[in-house]
Image 1 (cartoon, rainbow, N blue to C red):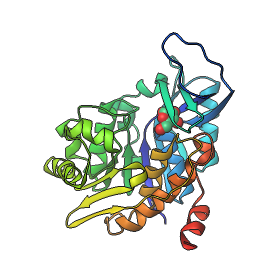
Image 2: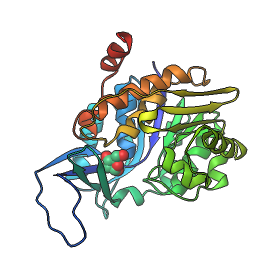
Image 3: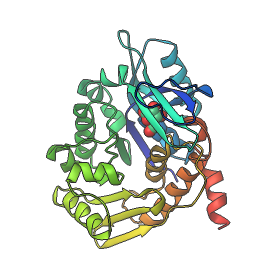
Length: 308
Ligand code: RIB
């Protein structure tokens, strides 16, 4: 697979606080251990795509600090082109504080820093990057105006766009939907955007119809352990998930998006195969601690899928 992908998105250093459970208001609890890992939704998606075999270029921002240098080094180690990452002198590199419970569930607090200093002008500076891609991917950890500029540019030269509307937002502009080819929300994100709670097949269909009515060709709603619902033209199906024991769910959704973009044919002709690949990739991610360290290489995923 040789898809060429531009990721417009966030870069964070993740501080992981290992705890048995979340504290109650006013309660003090002990932390079991503390660890750090490279992360950020955008960077995780870029790494997932690169490890799946795609050619990846990144557009984003870091601060002029040790965390920024660490993240650029980590991304380059996966062969990601980071020339589109601006180093901002007056901002800190983004950071996320992840409260990781013994159950594998996490709660995340993000300090956006340089990710939200990024402006549409930085996209205009990287126009050449966006003319040479099969897909441009974005999520909501950078300003919406930046995503709009990147998607406008990608569509102007006839390429495809993939929007992962995470973290959840209640409002998504018609203008952004009009330049989105494939949207990939989870159940909660989709319900917030459309106003239709995802509870059963009929509600998935109603969600998909809402996006199609707003000009989005293809919709994948990820359903956690229940798999992924896809709607594209006459195609409608639920592709089952793979059952594994989760140690840390951080970056599971990001891995799905990056792996999917690497695997999905630019003519959208292989949704089932691409979703199976993406699901297996995120099944690996939840079994290991941390974002970057847990994202699998292509051969690992292919070997397991081939032997099933
Ligand atoms: O989706 C997981 C990511 O969200 C973490 O790596 C963290 O940085 C936050 O951005």
